[in-house]
Image (tube, rainbow, N blue to C red):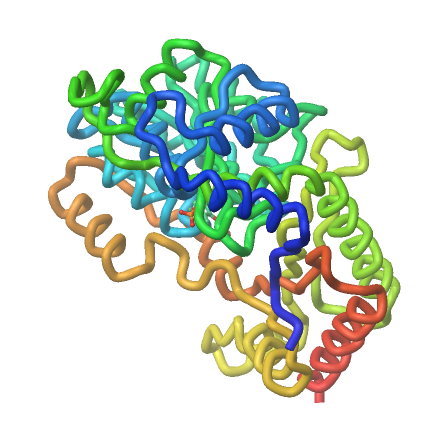
Length: 401
Ligand SMILES: Cc1ncc(COP(=O)(O)O)c(C=O)c1O
């Protein structure tokens, strides 16, 4: 079975883990973190060219800490896409804010600037763009809106380590950036995360928040939790940093290969992901996501009058998973606003008329029924990529019949 993502682990990580075990210090309640935590933070700081990195125990914790640092008050709204992993919205709720969902654009599935502008109210405290699949969001336009409305920008860069927007690393552009090191991510520590900032005061707050708001121990000054990254996890992350560039290069070369094989094929009815030609967005190729949108399926819709879009995508997915044993995946169906918990939350807000929320998440709902991600992780060979491309084309051809 070819999985959608797989961590590349080698002697480097083993060596770092053994050092922790030999020393016998598995974690540290110190404000600055343990030895491996600090070593990892220093490597990531240099890679990202940012003043502060605060390692935490998940991407969710990174988002939560960043939002806690803002000290949201009841009713404060955070604008974010619904087309994301639910952790983005959950962290807003956990920090006491109100998530307000914004639609995405059809080009790279990141937050739609037109819709974003219409959703800003007097209660908006922050915008949380998500660099989904490693596609950088339109940061210039987001900042223009944020600045003119005095709103913070917190980047959900959980999927985008190594992606660049106008030659700047994603996750270093907003006042804070949040990364995940979950097992499937470009760089992993099993579970883990990191927050970045250039702001000294925010960095101080974030270090306290990761440690129950304490500075010297038992002197809680602000609200915080135990969000600390264990030393063994930090050791894995440190080992991974040594090959980050190579992992990204391999992803890029696999994605390029897949693009060549799919773009120049005679199979139609799908869109491959492409970086903008002017180079202002550089992808890390965390996920290679196609949109399946064939004329055949549109014809069937118009004949039957029933919206059956998504059928083709699901048929291709089943074929590739079950017959070809390729772990293709759908990120995300349903989108967050259609999950039972958030659907209820949005409906109850509507009925309380606290806020007018028009149902204009149309591209989000379209994307959730059309996208399909194919593997391009660094452990795949050129033959694997060829096999994936051929399996995709043959699954696609099959549904035409
Ligand atoms: C867009 C996005 N936000 C947040 C998270 C949460 O990260 P974690 O799973 O490390 O808590 C993830 C990770 O899956 C993610 O993909």
